[in-house]
Length: 216
Ligand code: AP5
Ligand code: MG
Image (cartoon, rainbow, N blue to C red; front, side, top):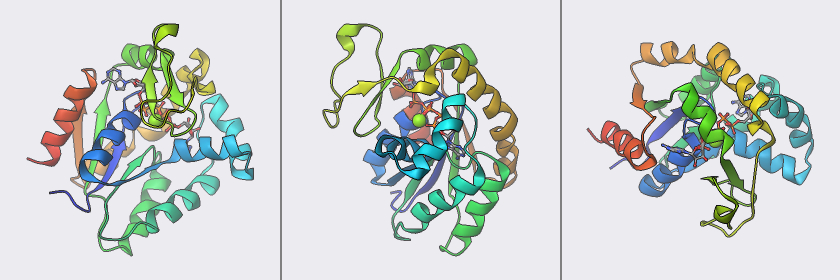
């Protein structure tokens, strides 16, 4: 099933949106659109978009809507209508959600499910403190000792720590999530498409819960 599924993965920094996106895109063959990955790729390439986004990302605050919305919606509407997608990290405020709704209104139907991965704050801080990501494909890894710091299993790329995983930026990102992004839970609950998934457990268990919710 699930060909053409349209999903939003929603949750605080470190909830596992990127991790679960990979598992779900492999399982359902969906396109993965991650706003954070897109900004980081532009940053690596030194594009004007990357340079503009960097100052906001490093501080742990949202990149302005004027920069973000067009870029992400252009990606979304370029996906064939019969193919599905996962949005990871977008939308992050009400304006972004309304713009997404408007863009999808011209693409046969809206988002099918918004999967909210709910994780406690101490666990978020623990995960982000040990996270490394691949320079090439952005896959996230947890690294607790230097011996574990090896090449990316997916593409062989080098692993590095994100600048916004410093403790002060992590704190800021969690506050920004609570203040600007969390109100979207009500927005999507009212539309009847919100799925709540407890996310403090293992990667496999969280994945099992998401799949069970999508394939009742
Ligand atoms: P973005 O890159 O989207 O970051 P984020 O939302 O803060 O989320 P993270 O990527 O940090 O966490 P994740 O949920 O993907 O967790 P992961 O799977 O890596 O955004 C970065 C910045 O870009 C923003 O701050 C903002 O400036 C800008 N931006 C992005 N989108 C924007 C938008 N729409 N509007 C405006 N600005 C925007 O997992 C974390 C770690 O935990 C990994 O090490 C992983 O291996 C591990 N892990 C995952 N699941 C588990 C588990 N179940 N148990 C144990 N470990 C786990
Ligand atoms: Mg991520």
